[in-house]
Amino acid sequence: MHLLLINGPNLNLLGQREPSIYGSITLDSIELALEEKAKEAGVKLDCFQSNCEGALVDRIHQAIGKVDAILINAGAYTHTSVALRDALLGAGIPYVELHLSNTYSREEFRHNSFLSDRAVGVVSGFGVMSYHLAFEGIVDYLSEDEGT
Ligand code: CA2
Image 1 (tube, rainbow, N blue to C red):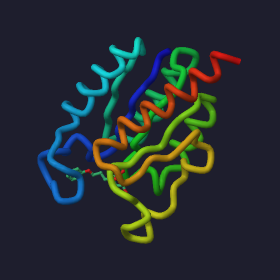
Image 2 (cartoon, rainbow, N blue to C red):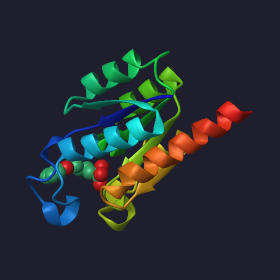
Image 3 (cartoon, rainbow, N blue to C red):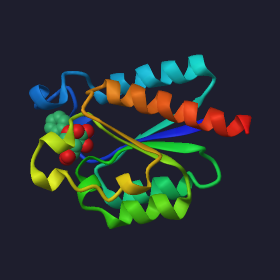
Image 4 (cartoon, rainbow, N blue to C red):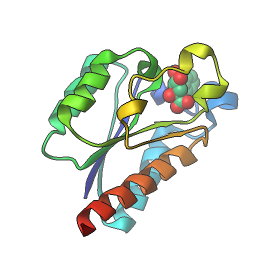
């Protein structure tokens, strides 16, 4: 099983700014912990972060035919990007949308997602744990597929 974790704009600042909203753990340590978890589960995990919409689209295209599923925290692009939606649907790769914060308890503009209606699942509001829950959820989902 091969997974790709994608993080969008500003998530490289994790642990350095606004700890009251996003926590004090850095993106590097989130990725390291997930890589460790993936290793234990016998899963290959690639990680990618960019602040640029086009770079995120390009990375999704590169995953076509190579990756079984994508875990994506698209950051603010979640609420704005038809291009990311088109890339994910065009790639035909199952994906999980995830967020550190509960976007529904925040400003109204964060209540819309261009990704969630076609996601396998959405995890929002559990801080760093959202990444772990998304990982476990998609591994379980893909394992059930393998069994049928
Ligand atoms: O809760 C999430 O994970 C979000 O995807 C985070 C995005 C926000 O636009 C979404 O509505 C919800 C923002 C990421 C910004 O990350 C920062 C981290 C530290 C300091 C400043 C920004």
